[in-house]
Length: 615
Image (cartoon, rainbow, N blue to C red):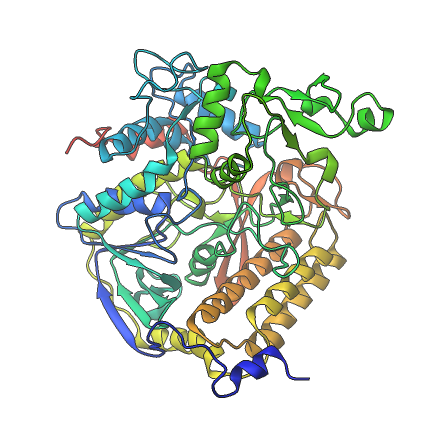
């Protein structure tokens, strides 16, 4: 029986690739600051760096910058702009609350920047053309709207007032336009493949990066004095099945941990890699969470059971369903809301939030009217995800690179922002840390000489990148990814033991040694997916190494060692770090408060900060 790929390889059967194929061809770009990743953090980094006179900035993005990344389609809530006059919690207090809510396993540096500079970034986005307040008076009388400023406080956070609503669909176009106005050179459809160290020495200052054109296969070489990593996190390690269920997680398949892996291979430290959680947001086997309940976006929707009985979704437990106290399915009762509350949820939340806009269109095309119709909530019908369907904790508080008060990694000249840092958070965090990293990297570039690159390092990377297109058979990217996911499900899921983790590491090493060398790709797109697989494989190995290293359980990390059941004993209240030396992971650790006094250190590193950009 002829396979699909055997048939495809026969002369005349392969569809013509719509772009010129330029494998092995090189293009070199010289800049001062290179930003890798054109999402919210990346665009903010580029804008901030480019505002420094004499600094050339280039940005590379795997997709199209105008709508790429988790914040590309939209967003409707900006967390922790604590210097806004409408907020009633001091920035230092809010930062401490965030850290304490994670038991100390959080990013104090990033959150302190977020709480102190978030409102400045919010206002600066408005200067760029993003719609950040109700200037058209659409939501007069709605919960959280302040008539004097026309700002809208997120209703779910009204008791503490720690979030502002905004029109997220306007943000990425405004950021891209500002990048272009400031002269940032944007290279869309370019994925970063590796970082270059000075003279090719691992751990030496960064000297640039290499990349691949996802459409033509052209090899890109970027020389830079400073690099800011702003790539997305990772979301499809434990769950992968394209044919039966699709990749419909909150995170795109393109979020493959590339930046974290590039940093690790360059000699930078990573941490919190052992943290994972249950995969709750639409796995492809489940509907997306929509109305009411614990959804953080569509707020204050009252819930009723199928008999119209008002329920508290969070307390409507499985036992209540089995006893018959409440009747499935549950419903979001939009008609019961006030006009203002319903309007701000449906017309702002469902229109501006990235994961809801498509759903709103489907409902409205089917004739749904929130003034008259209920909306089904699928959670209790479908149950929870299986325990072995896990995620590195969606967008928040996952592993990533270690940073200091300049958001610099442990490699000189290499900075990180947004989801690239360890224990990141949402839109406001990405915007604010990107803005911050941009100005720090620009200063470094202005004060630094151009480092020397190594042609040997480039040649090794080029050989690695093009290996799959030089093969005509073997395995393709989907098969390799599925094997990685099954290994992680079997050996690094909810419960962990030394035996299971070592079996998992053996399996991943077998994949790396015996199956990854059989990867083949028929076109530049499949080559991209193959390279993403290799990042996912390395990221998975780091998760297992960190899991083996932590010989204690920890509720805050969603980490259960069956053979070490004690929860967070004092000697294990620390960050475990990993860095590569001589091709092997080297373990280290950091105290949970390694950033020192938050207020004093922030001030010491930002004495020249003047607030909102006025240029």
